[in-house]
Amino acid sequence: MRLLLTTSKGIEDLASAEVSSLLDRIGVPFRVEEKPLGVEGRVLVEMGEAYYTDEKGRKRELSVATYLNERSRLLHRVIVEVASDRFEGISEDEPEKALRRIEDFVSDLPLERYVKTSESFAVRPFRKGEHRITSLDISKTVGKAIFDRLSRFGTPRVNLDHPAVIFRAELVGDAFFLGIDTTGDSSLHKRPWRVYNHPAHLKASIANALIELAKLEGGSFIDPFCGSGTIPIELALRGYGGRITCLEKYRKHLRGAEMNALAAGVHEGIDFILGDATRLSEYIDKVDFAVSNLPYGLKIGRKSMIPGLYSEFFSELAKVLEKRGVFITTEKRAIEKAIAKNGFETKHHRLIGHGGLMVHTYVIE
Ligand SMILES: C[S@@+](CC[C@H](N)C(=O)[O-])C[C@H]1O[C@@H](n2cnc3c(N)ncnc32)[C@H](O)[C@@H]1O
Image 1: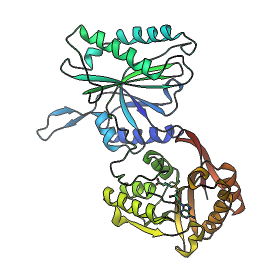
Image 2 (image 1 turned 30 degrees about the vertical axis):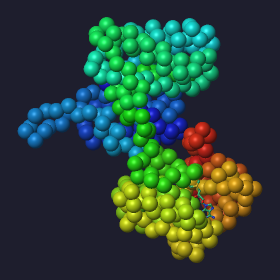
Image 3 (image 1 turned 90 degrees about the vertical axis):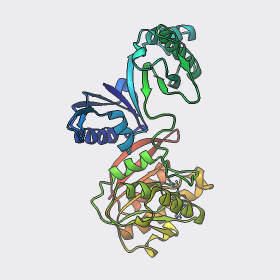
Image 4 (image 1 turned 180 degrees about the horizontal axis):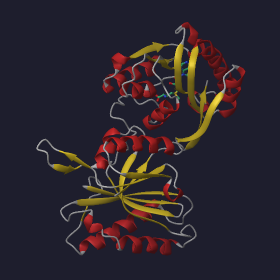
């Protein structure tokens, strides 16, 4: 079986390491490939069957897709691959030709193995790159091909709102992919604990990627611009043993973070402080790790305030940080200046896709 796993761009290596560690635990042989067909934000896993022994000693099949949906912190979707291929030159194809190529490809697939005639289905499309067709064209064409194929075996049922089986059809550049989306319509990064919706919240999958990059070894932890608490909450949910602090300047967001932590069942494990990160040393003497999604110009109103804010914050951080910090921001120039001016060294830099942008991420010591 092959599973296509989706995540944010730029964290495929971390998602692949997480999936490998989860699959090692259930003893299934597997192979992981980052960016299959060159597609970013995707990881492909090819594996054998997984089994477990039930209470009566019988060998039972284990659904790896369900296991990954339940246990992963970095994935967005778990999709069982039906088929994938490269459609050379599809970007330049006339719309009719491009859609015919997709329809011919899908019609030949043994789709009846994936949907029972009693089950309804829908197609959810995803398209990225230069094409002369839209995602709506793709969903209509793939939907028709699936319908025609299934009609040979019974009367297919389409239900666009509440389908029993969700087909996912992706066209990214010239890579086409068809699969069964086992995650459903709500991506895994939309956590059920999010009862307060901060306007600039971080995806939970990226919060976990930052936590991975911080290589925490126990000890105290702070998110000095914690907003609705995504990073501290995700860390607490991982069972982190050290003290976790969530610092935020605005009462509304801090209350929101507390509500989220209550919903997540981790309120007891986090200290919430209403305060200004540019006066960090007034609240804490020292801290081992700091991980944060810094305020970006667009979100806090005046972009001209950013260099000053970062400069003051990093100078405070230099007084208290003992081990490592991880920061994500769009403001490359301001953060690099503040890092260098305050005696920190950048140990790692990468770009991560967030909110349609590639955002800079720094690991500093
Ligand atoms: C990008 S948001 C963080 C979002 C957060 N990671 C989440 O997922 O909800 C930045 C936060 O920093 C807060 N902030 C801005 N200036 C601050 C300061 N001087 N001290 C502390 N927090 C500040 C903003 O109110 C905002 O909530």
